[in-house]
Structures are given as structure tokens and as C-alpha cells.
Image 1 (cartoon, helix red, strand yellow):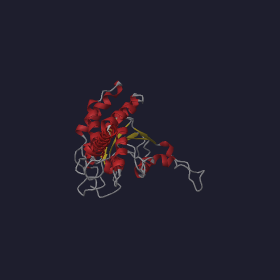
Image 2 (cartoon, rainbow, N blue to C red):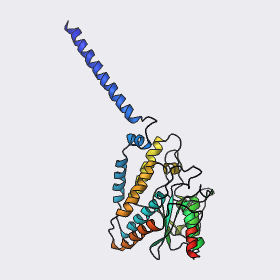
Image 3 (cartoon, helix red, strand yellow):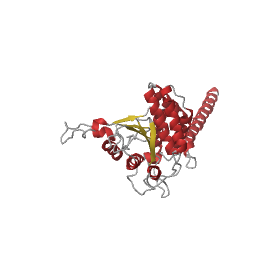
Image 4 (cartoon, rainbow, N blue to C red):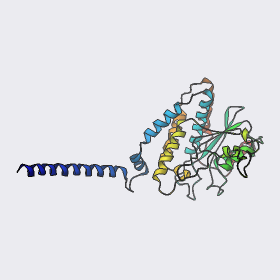
Length: 309
């Protein structure tokens, strides 16, 4: 009679283990498979730790030395993020929208001052060439005494495309700094490395080309502010969850992206400089944001035109 008793205990234990496994599997499944009714933020936080990605980004940024030069890059990149946030677009394809959440600021290096700002306005102007960088350069040159941008630096929130890079080359703009890489990732082909492609020497390949003339005079640098790395990692995670649209401009309408831009604005006004020579720069950047950057948008360069007439 003891053998059946042993079997019943073993059966009881087996059923218990199976039940526990089923409950655990259900819990994991429920956690890792959000319902369609969950918000974007809840859905994504279920799959990965947004705050952990931020901490990793800060750690990565901290591996680079913080010189007076890179500190300047931090300040102006934060200002570029803030320019975009001041006129944030929740739907890049809406007829009433301005365009994409991409913007830029232009620095006159002879004065160490911000002289102009612009945002992408492809919908507002009904013109697909009206990227933030193109608007920035075109508007400034149209109403200033400058024929080129030899002594300027452009800070933009997203790595420039081929069109914008071509204009940077033609205006002799020596340096561009971007706040997010236009990544190629898995099946998505990014629009980044446009300046590097102008500089590429493919002469050794069949039917190859030499680098574009004078392209070695222009430089494209990624900012080392942690928001850049944070955006890059969030975008990769977002692509992994997006079954259809993996456009970077769509990502830049999400609450995830907006949170990074909000964090950047907060840091712009709480940033503690380590190099005294940048005290004037951060003060001017903050004043410029508060007094010059509009939360609305004009058709083309109207404010600068009014100042020069």
C-alpha cells in the first residue's frame, strides 16, 4: 500500500510544480506582452528600463574629458534641443503641423554668440527642402552681410542629411555638431554620415570617385552630451517594438523623445559650468532662448528681416 501512497505524493507534487510554472509563465507573458490599450510609455517601460538607458548614457558621456571646448558644445546642443521643444509637434504628418521635431542654432565664432535659430518646417511651408539646417543657413545669409559661413558653427538636434550637408559645404561652414545620430539599424537605412560620404575616396573601386573637392574642410561631430546617447538607445529600443513605421522623424514625435528634450531644457538652466570662460556663453544661450526663440513660426526669416530694415 506504500507504493500507491508514494505515487500520490509524487503526483501531487508534480501538479503543484506545473501549476507554479504555468502561473509564472502567465506572469511573464502578461508583463512582456502589453495590451493595445496601454500607453506608449507604459508599453515601452514594460520591455526595457528607460531610466537605466539614461544612466548608461550619462556614464558614456562621462568617459569623455570635459574641456572648455566640449562644455561649449554641451551648452549649444542643449539650446538646440530647447529650440525644438518650444514648438513641439505631436504629429509630423498633420496638415496643421509645422514639420519635424528637428532644429538648429548658429554660432558666430568671432563673437562667441548665438545669432540665429530655425526649426524644420516642411509642412508649414509646403516645401520638403525646408529642413531646420537649410532654413537656418538660408535665412541668415539672406538678411545678413555674410556671403558664407566660414567663421560659424551649426548645432543641430539630428545629424544632417545630404541636402543640408551640401549646403554646409557650399557655404564653407567648417563645423557641425549634432545631438542625435541618424542611425542605420537592422532593416532601416539611416540618412547619416552625409558629410563623411562627401569625403569618401572610392577611386580604387571600379568606376569610383575621388572625394568631393574641398570636402575635407568641413567637419561633422556628434555631441558628447548624454542626451545624444540617450536618444540613440531609445530609438533602437523603439525600432525593436515598432512592427511597421521605424522612421526617425516619427520617433521624434513620441513621449519618449519629448522626455529627453524636456530633460535637456531643464539642464540648460541648471548646468554648472566647470570652465569660467564659458560663463558668458551659458548666460547668453539662456537669454537667447527666453527672449529670441519663439514658440510660433513665421513663413520665412521675417524677424531678422525686420531687424535689418
